[in-house]
Length: 253
Image (cartoon, rainbow, N blue to C red; front, side):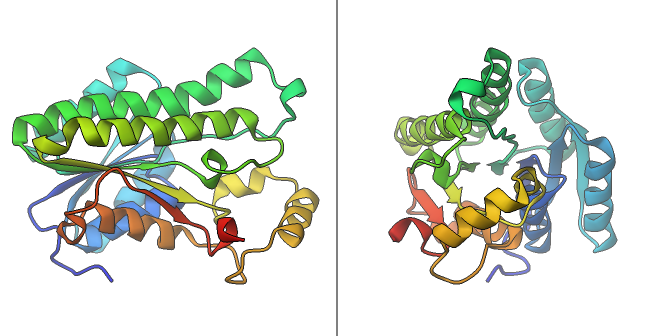
């Protein structure tokens, strides 16, 4: 459970915050008292998410950002600091997926997925950490996937990108632990988000029948988003370099 004033005076940045898990995290940060910056390529969805937060009496802004572009990520962090004065928490959630057998995947598919999922997370961390070093503290959570931990058919490039996110975050967590910056990773399984709609219904149902979640259902964006927010809270102050799997027991089978 998140406390209503737990993040009072803190500023949280959420990439890919206009829908799904990112939006759920942004709403949770705001509910806990944080000022929230939502970054996304989708302007209409991003502005709608900000409207929802502000309608509940919290403070938020939207910044259109392509996380694969260094200048845009640097500008995002700079604008966050220009408006709110600091950056305390970041949830690097922006990501995409394509479903192809490896032999049907193109070089363009590789570049697109790696640039957003892996390079985008690296760029986000690069500029977030630079600001947090000036403050002497900060907490970052990167969104990976169980596809970065186990093999899932037809997701080879996505899996490579998400496995890279895990390895990069763990290295960075050690690198900046003594600087007061904590870095962790969440690894969701199948969650009811727009990205899940990319799976053909027949293929998804067959896969879930063959590999059911022991808990008996698919997870919700709120369950992942609120976990990411908790990892950014002071209650998780002794946790860094952690690779937390959120899958209803899926990978424990």
